[in-house]
Image (cartoon, rainbow, N blue to C red; front, side, top):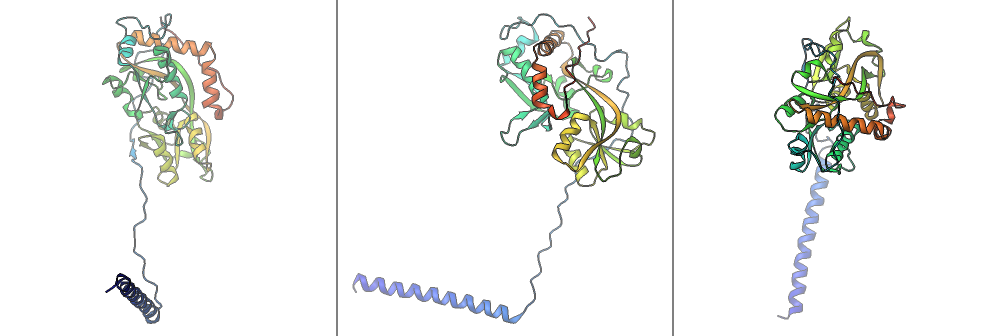
Length: 336
């Protein structure tokens, strides 16, 4: 048999298979259409409503002004800043330089202060820029830094366990915290207020009685809520993004945090608004493990420099312009 005839027969065979399959499919379709007009039932799948990890804070935290430290913002006076890359031998700065990078505990969930840019994947914000200025003073290069994401509750343990060299994460200096860590001078002052949905009916702290209010565990935010005449139910989350999700899903009625944090949440959901009077304050400082006075003085020297040369103002304009006109950098108060 010739090759041509063989190919023709194979072609006819495949054609018969295709025609048969088509006829079977058409027959099945006609049969199905003619036998019933009932719409097949959809598979039932439970709705997904993931709940944020909320735990009730049932009792007021120990007073953040307790203890005998006096003014919690007092810090060590800086000396002259050494040149970048020339840290004094035996100093904590020299030990950091020997590691090749400054390890800093930061946030990645607080818009404006410490958040991950979805476009670049990089951590950005006011706190991040402050940390980078310290790295620049150490190495002459702001990129010689290792940013480690920590929750608010992990800040003190991260320092005590030497997982990081510094904490720059909306970390307010208080007497209570000074029992466990040291602080630089204050680099930003904030006030605490309330965030709620525009149609919630919540207009002030007086409206929170019996309501569910979200805070982040390990922060100073619960204290003022327990001091309100009509006490709300205070629920703690791991971070402020979880509080935002809890409010959007109806698991809580409001959020209470420092105003720049709340402004960052409003930027993510325009159905929310900041309401009411100031119910608390915050004084952000760099957290430093105890027993490192040289490092405290060095960080304060960096903070003094960025105050004096306009860098603090430049960072504010770039990161916190949404908060309005700059109040200027806070004065640093020294105890010696």
